[in-house]
Length: 169
Length: 118
Picture (tube, helix red, strand yellow):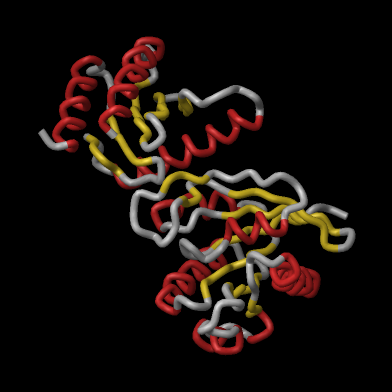
């Protein structure tokens, strides 16, 4: 079976690097730099994250993007040849939903691939659940999955859904 | 003298030392411009941070030791990003006929000075 390339995108602080670190079976390639602006964390991804994992027999390559808009050129670079998009957004930060919606449009308009919207921090209420986020984004309920990016069993859920959609489409 | 003025001063000196440079951008390692003489500094700063961040990781992964610079060479010139301490990057752009050895020599020493101020 051919390995599948999946891009992991989302606004800054969505949990993209955490998601890849949690799931990768191989040593993660990350590119953290000290954050010089107030973004609620010490470091930020400036180029990419890279990890790999198996779902059953299927090998997946995960390519994580930087979150800040100024790195938008990397969204295109990393989306090249991707077969699926894992979009993450913080469920406890609805002010990020607009930016995430625009990012989802930006990537899917240039790279029309199946996507799943993962709503992170489901373990930290109060948090928006996937069923509340789907109408906000105007996307089908089946494409929105809640997760805790730190928990392997929870984080793998949206990837399984994405793989199902990729097989169907 | 403020930190910004001090950095501006170093940038001016670097321009005098290497007049063939097309542009100079000093940025934070997370891609925000600090001092520069480039029209499109925000974009160049972000790309310089990406190039350096990726270069550092490649250097580590392939056992090259700590990164000194990342070089992009096109048929019309160079874009070189120098590590500038832990917090900064120094990106210079130069035409294809520039003396790259001389640029390295000067830019590395200016990067070290910038790093002390950052």
